[in-house]
Image (tube, rainbow, N blue to C red; front, side, top):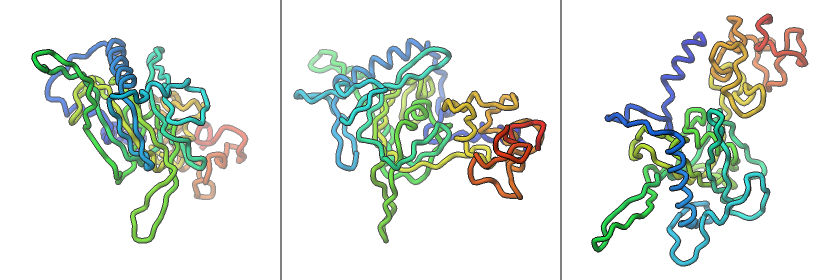
Length: 319
């Protein structure tokens, strides 16, 4: 299969639980200004954080309720992104740069990271339980008076996941925040399904522009800020193009952004390109040593047969 056919199939198959599906919309939605919508969404999210509190069970199940009698607001847990603290829960906000403008995503970390856990990259797969809701103001007449309330309406609930899903085809909010958590440790009990302990647990508050924006999804109106509580059970390293190199290792400059790594400049990022240097030889064949794909990226040879120079699959003059 050549890389162009692979790229076409990839684009046509980006359909995951969180992917944007235009076919779900039967009517044309007017496109709003991104920045104005972000400002509106952020106001709704911050209203929610200021007027609601969170309760967490021992198994990290989350209930978020409206403050009624002095409970601490979710916003009261806010600390700076770079601050290290032993107190949980912690509310932080991560900056996301889109077209040279900075936006923010709030997220709540419910407990410390698993010391032996793995954090996914934006190109890996995750096995996670989650509860998805959208935020919306609702106005109703009560005794003849308009009363507006902020509601979080559930649209999906997956307490027992059955599949891994890819972060590179999920909504932006998940791609940005999941790498800030670590997975858990599997627990095997004879005769019972495998479970996990010490898994990452949190809540993400996503502006619509980092979610589905103008495209309505099943159970989700267009332009909806989203709230996901989740448990990150497990991580599977991705190899999107099946070239024997983990997608983590295709991030050559190590900046966590896989969109700016395109060695041969053909418009296909390395993690989707099965011929990274454009020399018409498949990457997987260039990296093999005596017919075997190396176990680690560091073992891949350069053209001189050592590991100190430019890797063979990145050198168009070597195959």
